[in-house]
Length: 443
Image 1 (cartoon, rainbow, N blue to C red):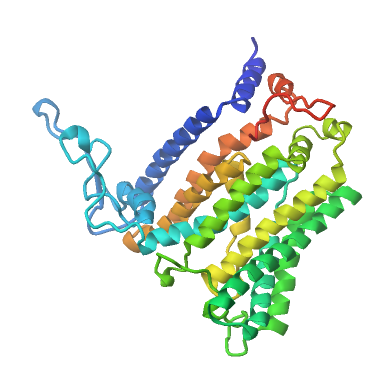
Image 2: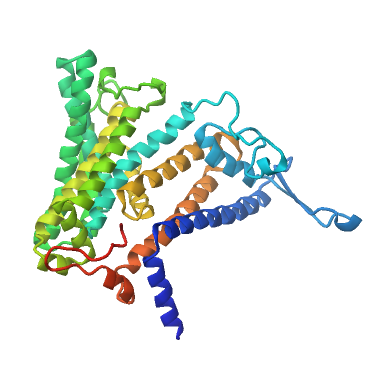
């Protein structure tokens, strides 16, 4: 057997990996990223001047011989990763507790007394994860149809402005609880509508002009940012603010905060809405005719057309749905986090691409991938405040984790489309009578 045959077999094995095997690969990749990141932290710590070492690597005295070495580092990798992951949850663990603590006679329960799961840092983590659930779903829907929607960021920006203006124009006519019950759904609907319409543009170009959706969606991101910035600056700008932003939304146009402190800008209602949409999208993709059209178009477009799938309509409708989900993400950013529209929207749409890849384009997996991203975003803030590690190095560590964890899934998805995976293609044959044999790599 040649090395090429071995490579093909290994690649086919990766593509056909079970859900448990893919989870194990992701965990192993996470551990590997932490190991590589630890080395980078130590190297950076040796290149930095400090009066006292934050981390000392020593060798014990073997058999009474003198200590072999003792090297100091200005940055402590244990503290960095502790703040990155545990700090993002609001420090739930007891001081000094570790995975081996119960085996050493220590306490079995790891949580410290008085820990409040509704703390502000947990709210930041869940807030970031909530927005990424929508952008991850947006990308996943398009990817499942075989469409590379790189334009979720632009659809999010358009939906954000539409949501802000619809609420501002309607707010003078309502107030109080009635205002909340009207304005929150109105803002979400406006974001979904305009995000979906903006997503329809590359869908129509691909379906009827055979335009490459990667190029059109990337370009439309710049168009959305420029046009929306112009509209805000010249037509919708708050006259009392020097920043390029709209007027602030009224307080009653915000999501009900329920048990979290309103100052945390997070609401369980928004998270519940995200989880509900995850369940709905999963059901639509797996148990409806439209979902069948989307999945078969993404797996085998020619066989799908032969089986009666309207390829053009599927392309347009998939991008409309994808854009609508991205637009809802923009509405959440405006109504839940910022309270107005302001230029310089964070790259939630681009992060959604990685969230979708990490989730294997599975709507259920988007929840866990978005939570990981939420932890990394929130934890990075804690590291900046709690350590002397420069933010640039923290960004590198975050990037390493995302790269290591997402790349195996990316190569698995890519391998499903390559010709040297015959066992995969056999499992993915689509019957001409409308049935589907076997499972897809994205399921």
